[in-house]
Amino acid sequence: MRTRTSIAISLCIAVVVMALLLPSVHPPQVMADSYSSHRVQAFGYILDNPTLAIAAAGITTSPTSTTGVTSARVEWVFGTVTGSYTGCTVQAKTSIDGTRFMTLGSPVSLTVATNALNAWDIYQQAAVATGVTTTAVSSSAAAGFGQLSEFTFACSGYGTGAPVTITAIYK
Image (cartoon, rainbow, N blue to C red; front, side, top):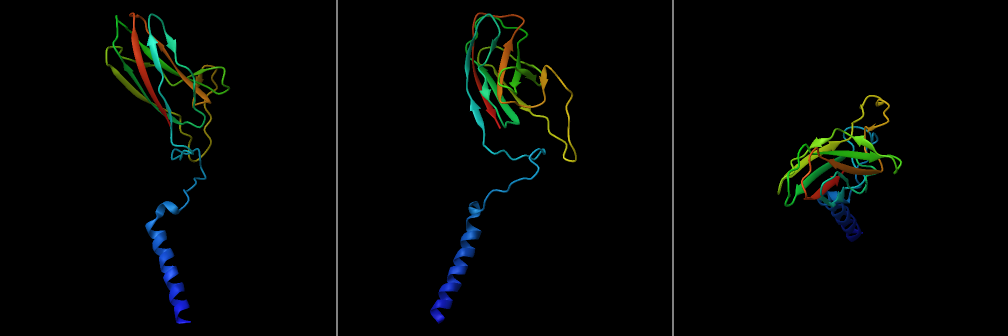
C-alpha cells in the first residue's frame, strides 16, 4: 500500500513540475474582441519580395493576397539608377472583391537614387473598443486591407532605369 501511495505522490509532483517548466504546453489565449487595437493575428506574417525594373513610365506591382492583414512594413531599395527621377510616389491599393482596387492611405514620396532605401508602415484603422466604428462611404479609398493589395509607382519626371527590390511584410 505504501508503494502505491509513493508512486501516486511522485506522479502528481512530476505532473506539477512539468506544467511549471513547460509553459508552451498551454493552448494560446483567444481574445473575444478580435476588432480591438490589441488584436492577435491568426497567422504570423505574409512576406512579399517583388522586383521591378522601372524605366520611363509608372508601374504597378502584382497583387498579393492580404486577407486578414491589419498592417504592413514596406521597404523599397533601389539598385543602380540611370537618369533622373523626380517627384516620385508610391500609392498602396487594396481590393475587397479581387478585381477593383481602391487607395489605401496616402501616397508616400520616394527618393529614387542608387542604393536608396525607402521604408514606411501602413496601419489599418483601429476600431473603437467601446462601440462600433463606421467609416465614411468612399468610391476611391479603403479604410483597411482587402483580399489583395498592390503598389503603384509614379513620377513627374523619369530617367531611363531604376531597378528596385521591394520587401513587404504583412501582419
